[in-house]
Image (cartoon, rainbow, N blue to C red; front, side, top):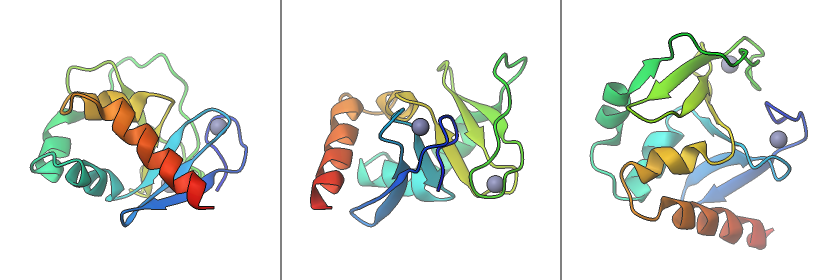
Length: 130
Ligand SMILES: [Zn+2]
Ligand SMILES: [Zn+2]
């Protein structure tokens, strides 16, 4: 799969039954549909599906340009997570979610103390396996 922002090939990472695509160049992350729930669950965040449904809202007056989905190439929809300033890109066909560098950590940080550390361990461990 090609990176949404820099078009470089992404690495497929699998760790604890969760799959994500990671761009080593820009450190962006693509999660297929349902993987965010699994990731939150693995970090022991309660009721992830409910949390996501409640917090994720379409972004209003977004200054960022829409980007094409890496799977179906359709323009993705910008979403805002809770009160954070995080703007994620969502496939309109529900294929998955794109997170720019640091955005996934910010979302997890709303629920955890050290998400940044946890996620970098997750990625490092998986990369070292290859
Ligand atoms: Zn990239
Ligand atoms: Zn798509």
